[in-house]
Image (cartoon, rainbow, N blue to C red; front, side, top):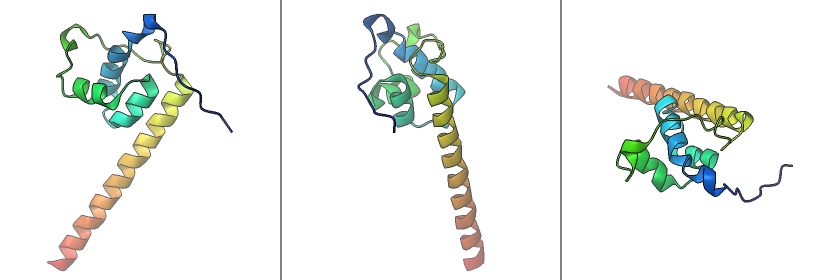
Length: 106
């Protein structure tokens, strides 16, 4: 079993977090705010503000890959992507089932 340890981000990399969040929200909108915050090591509030484009310093953000910035590993990033894709597929199936139920009831 892999033991979880607190994730410390050095001061020099802390300003890179919002850039990584912006990159993730642009390129992978299927990721939830919680998944992004875990990947980057930020709060869900910051992620939602950047997603809504109301972050205090949004105009100066430049989208950067979190793996290149060393905020997360490629392995962890890929696992989060796979999980998000499974969730999207599951939601699609549920929506299709509900539509079929409505069609049968009418």
